[in-house]
Structures are given as C-alpha cells and as structure tokens.
Image (tube, rainbow, N blue to C red; front, top):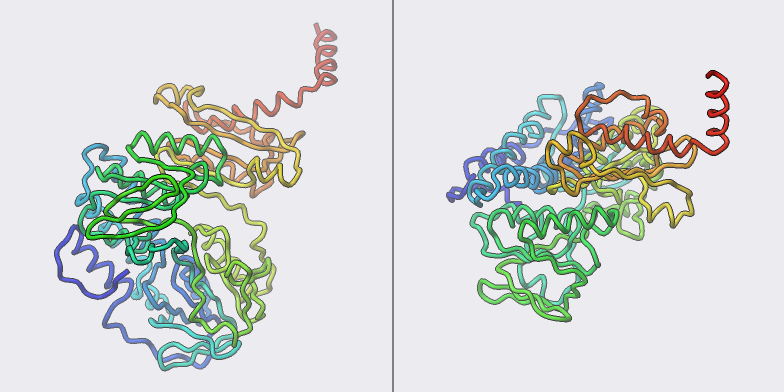
Length: 489
C-alpha cells in the first residue's frame, strides 16, 4: 500500500487522501520516549491496537510502533475494502460498475480510518511511533534514533500475502490483497490463484463488476477446509455469478507480455490481463531481530507462543496473525485481550480455549465454528450430525431460500456442540448463537428450551435441537412413557 501523497485523479482519490492522512500522516513527528513503558506494542493492526487501547485505558504507559499504516491489513487491504466491494456489488446487482464500486470502497475505508488513526491513539495517551522496530535485547526496542524500554513487549506485526514458487510468477507483477484494492482502472480480466476465502470473495466481487474472472486451484474443490456441501454451495454461487472455476489446476509457469498474462497449466492455458495471488500467508518477522530477544519461530515461520501467548522470552508476548494459524481479525482481537491480562497482571488468561468462528462473505455467506466432520473422524471422536435446509423454515419459504442450510455436529447424549456450519444470507450472523452456546457450554438439549421469534431464520437452531432430542427417545424411554400414558388414561 502506498502512503505517499497522490494528486492523480481516479475513483475515490479524495477518500484515499483522507485515509492516508489518518493512518500514516506524512508530517507526523515521533514523541520522545519515556524512561520505561509498561507495554511496548509492535504493530498497529487489530491485535496491536486492542492491546494499546485496552492497556492505556487501564492507566498503563504504552508505546505503539507501526512501520506501514495504522489499522493493519484489516482496515487497509483486507476486511474493510473486500467486504465493502462485496456488499456494494451484492446490492447493486447487474448495475454495479468498477468506478462506483471502488469509490464506495474507498469512502468506507476512509470513514473507518478515523477509529484507527494516529491522532485518536495519541489523544488516548498512547505514544505512537511511526517507523521500523528492531529488538536490541530482551526488553529494548529501537525505532528511528530512539531506544524504548519496556516491562513487557508485544509482537503484533501480522502477516502478508505469500507467493507460491511458480516459474515466472514474480516477473508477471502479480496482484495480492495488498495491491488489488489500489487498482484505478477496471482490468478486462483477472486470473485468481487460490480458491480459499480470499480468492472466492475476490472472484465473486470482480465478476459482478463485469470483469472476466478465472479462479484456479490445485485442490478438487473451492474452500477445501469447509464441509463438502458448503464447498459445493460456494462453487454454485461462483458459477452463477459468471466465474470460470478451474479445479485440479497444476500451474507450471506464468509469463507476462504487454497487457496480457498467460498461465500455463499441465493441461491447457489461461490468459488474463492481470494475475491475483490469493494463497498462503507469511508472518512479518524478518526485520525484528528476534534472535537477540530470544524469541523463537515454529516450523511454519510463526512466533512460538504458549497457551497464554508468551513467547520463548518470558518478557515478550505475541498476538494475531504473527503467531496464529487462525488468521482472523476477531481472533487477533480476542488474543489481544488475553495479552492485556497476562502481560500487565497475573498470567491467568488462556488463548487455547477460545471458540473462534469464521465466515466467507460470499453470497451466500459460509460460516463455520468448531470441529468439522473430517477433523472429528481423524480424531476418532463419536458425533451425531444434524442438518436443516432453510427452505424448510416458514421464513425461508417466504424469502424463496434455495440451497441454504445449517449443519450442527454434537456429542451423542445431551448434545454438547462440537461444531457447526451455516450457509445462508447473513450466515455470519446466524452462527453467533452457536458460538455463544459453545463458549458457555450449552448443549443442544439446553438450546432447545430457547424461544425463538417467529418467523425467523434463527429457528433453525430450535429445529436442530428438536432433531437431537428425538435421538434421546430410546426404546427404553419410549416404553416407560407408553406405560405412564396408559396408567393415566
């Protein structure tokens, strides 16, 4: 992402000027560091911002260091721009066009940037330093010409888009989520490599903008980590919106000539104006000088942490994408709250017990939480599977629901919830009650006691709870009940 001033006119240019002035003001002068901070936070993405905001609100002295742009990926090149485009194209339908969509996306990003701005955090008492951070020892961090000393340090530097080792790919100047939202003119066509959540969302959004999109992945289904039926629903949605999906695509090389890029497959070729890479992430750790701080990495290149998010240096914690395989904004937020407790007070909070949902914001949305059938079977865990099509609900029939469904996996007996998937409009909202139940140990039997408003889609949970309760009517219980009914005739 460029943070330099830009006077060129393009859709949303004025909004970008506001956004950049908030997240990385060019005329900002770093404060003079105090003698010692309670917490030095490296990285001002979701995890770092929550750490700084929460700790400062408790009266702690906080230093927050950011080298790129306040708000991290989520605000600048991730959740905010991608969901803005998806929402705009969904609401506009066939009328959606590139200039209007990108104008809207940039206006939304600029309006949210004030919440993550340098000015807001300095007003809240945080010492904000813009520049590269580097450890000098176990609890000293250098930024610019200053040395910052802290009782504890938090690494929250996030991750960036990975780049697969494909011959010629780098020379083709591929786009990633970090650059695709900087487009100023509509490309004629895009080839997107990677059919995970990022690839599927970008494919649907750009195809709705009347841009030819080819989505490639070497696996045999899109969203391969989701349930087979959820993957099938995503594939149907992509095809319906005009995306050319190529699965099992083995890419041998990429070459760019003029305004066209060719992707050579083991069988065939794909041509597009630009390539977008949407597969894999790499933790941002290379410039931190972690060795001198005694902070180790895992085999996957993430910072190694324990259940309380302590690194191999007891004075240093980590939170967010830099240390987690579940790379979601809400997970980074939750981990930051664990760090605040453990770094400033008694280290009693645990991150390994968090219930973390996720959602792919396509139409329909695909939301999931907890275990999947595959993970349970691999772990040899007994479970029961309950499924309901939203078309069976009165609200679903009234709205013409097609292909939307919910699935819940639960233990036999009382029905402890192990996992769930919801594929529906606003699926991310509809899975929230399941998250609440799992966090608080509520079983399907207990959820079945809840009264849901009628007619709503949330009734799916009552229907599924009813399915589960019927499994508890064993032959023995049925015999006892029949005997009782005969007795009271």
